[in-house]
Amino acid sequence: MEYSKVEWPSKTEVIHSTIWVITMTVIVSVYLGVFDILAVKALNALEALI
Image 1 (cartoon, one colour):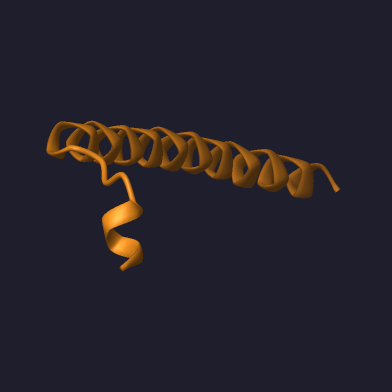
Image 2: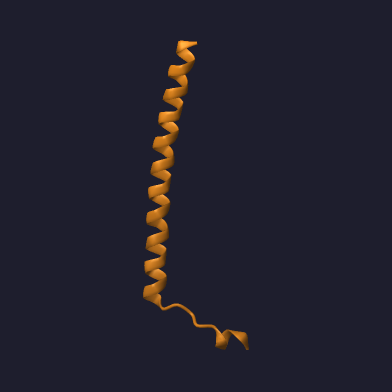
């Protein structure tokens, strides 16, 4: 079958990839959260001027 031709990743490769994905997800989430907070504050300040 085709499964025997596939080179499956080792357990350590899967663990490292999973940790990398979770880390990057947290970093991007924090970045977007901070950007969102700053954008809301900027828009509120702009709205107060108008």
